Length: 82
Image (cartoon, rainbow, N blue to C red):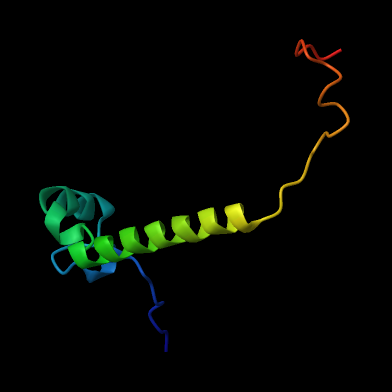
């Protein structure tokens, strides 16, 4: 007895398919609203990204400043690398 493999694919959730990828692509093209994520999900993800950006900025500002090349800072005022 074989079991059907679990999948996250949207293709399996479409009931009008004939089993061909071409048919699913056509259906998806004809029904973009059925495939797109919900507004609630999009808003939730936008909020998460904003919060993540705020946290990252706070981490960067709280971190200590380090001088990467402290001895070479005043040696070369013209900007040449030689």
